[in-house]
Amino acid sequence: MSRERDERKAELLRQIQQQRLDLSIQKKFWLESTARYDRGWLTLLSLKRYIAVGSGLAAIWSVRNPRRITRWAKRGLGIWSTVRMVRNFLPGR
Image (tube, rainbow, N blue to C red; front, side):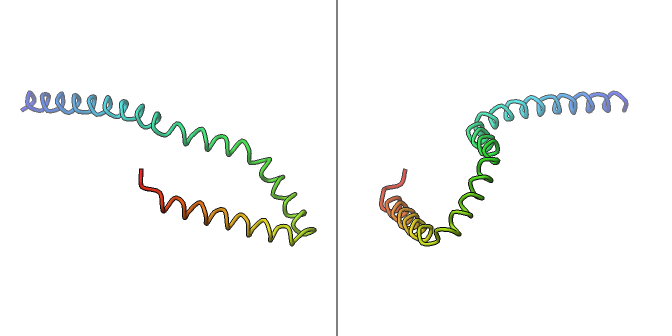
C-alpha cells in the first residue's frame, strides 16, 4: 500500500512539474502577445499629468470661448462619423 501511494505521489509530482513548465511557456507567449498594449498603457500613465493640466486649460478656454468648442465638437463628430462609415463600407480584413 505504501508503495502504491509513493508511486501515485511521484506521478502527481511529475504532473505538477509538467504543468509548471506549461505555465511558464504560456506566460512567455502571453507577455509577448500583450507587450504592445502594456507599452501603450504605460505611455498613457506617463502622460496623465499633462492630460490633467491640458484638460484644465481646455475647461478654462471653453468657458471663455463656448462657440469655438461647439464648432470643434461638431467637426469632431462629423469626422468620427465619416471614419465609421468608411470602415463599414470597406471589406473586412
